[in-house]
Structure formats: structure tokens, C-alpha cells
Length: 252
Image 1: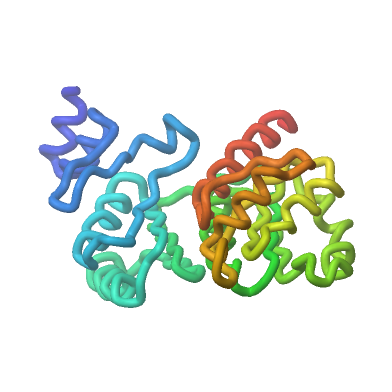
Image 2: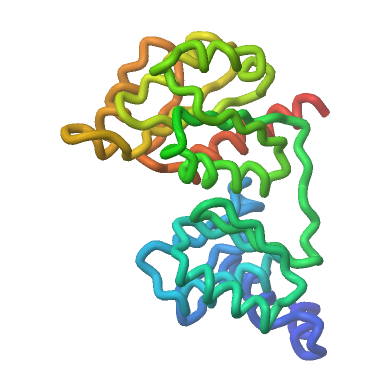
């Protein structure tokens, strides 16, 4: 405790960093940021940008960078990203921004990226599934896993799936995102011996086209797979990260 107080007093530690050390979270005007989640859970807190103002997103990202040297953001709109980019240009011009669709990862030069000896295959049925897959990829890359993207291999033309079978079998864990009837994760899970995480995507026509048909289909899969909620790329990425970390530990 005394060391923390002395560090705050001499300016080598900010109040937010000290609060993160003591409580595990930091409280600001935009809400609380769980700075200790990565150590406690193995997956960092992500800033869910949807429904927040640009100012709130920027404030939470700044808190994340100050306390953990990185920030993960999901469902970021164009206006929110513009505000974030402007703020970082003024306050943290040496920060690195990795934007993938509506997901953003920001790191400072002080961040020490981890490395996992594990590969996560991230598969999409079609182009419309890619933003959800991007969200999963950001989480896995942040954890240090190798990500192998295999896009646009939906079962409407089964040959597209079978053409990539050897590649799919090389992954340690697979995330498979698909909309419409959601058949792709079931097909893939029946052809590989690695864990498969199905992600239903809210794409399609009319009844069930909001992802419910895909979700129901995956839940009723006769081949073994895990299923997350509709469009829940972050959750799938987090689950794959935990599996990849266990594989890395076993290989060590």
C-alpha cells in the first residue's frame, strides 16, 4: 500500500493505475473498467461501444490504455471510431490501432503481447458473416494465438467446404460463423476432431432471418459442437482463447 501511495506521490503511477492495483477496477464518469479481468479470467474486458456516446467510448478506452496498455472495443460505429482516432492522435500518438470491421484493438508501446502455441481457425459461410468473425479474431489475436481465417466456404456449394478440409483439420480449435440456416458449423464439426464453436449470424430472409434459425439449427446439431449467442463473436473468441491457452500450457 505504501509503495503505491509513494508511486502516486512521485508521479510514476497515476491514480487510475493505483486504483486498478488496489480494487481491480477503475471508476470514471463513463463507468467502471475491469482492469483485472485478464488476470482473473484469462480474457480482458472489452468496451461494448453500441449504445454509448463517442465521449464515453473514448473515456473508457483511455482508462483501459492507462491501466492495461491496451483496449479492446466491439461494435464501434464510424463516428465513435473517428472520435477515438482523433483523441489518440492528440493524447497517445504512439498508440497502435488495429481495426477489423466494427472491432478495434489499441495498444501502447509498453504493451507486451503474449504468444500462444495454438492456432484458432476462424471460418465464415459468406461475406455477411465476416464482421462477427472479425470480432472473434480480435480477441484471439490479442491473446497471442495464431489466427487462420477461412472465409466464404458456405455449404450451398459443399465443394467449397471440402476444398478447405485439410486446412480446417490443422487448427487446434475452430470458430465457425454462419447465418441463414446455420448448417456450416454442423458440417465442419462432423469432419474434424478439434473443438468447434458455432456462431449464428443474424442474416437471412423473413422468418428466422434474424439469426434464430441459425441458432436453432446449431443447437440441434447431431455432431458435437458448442454454440454461442447470435452474433456473439467476442464470446466465441473468448472461449477459443481459453481452449488455446490450455493447449499452449499442455505443449509447454
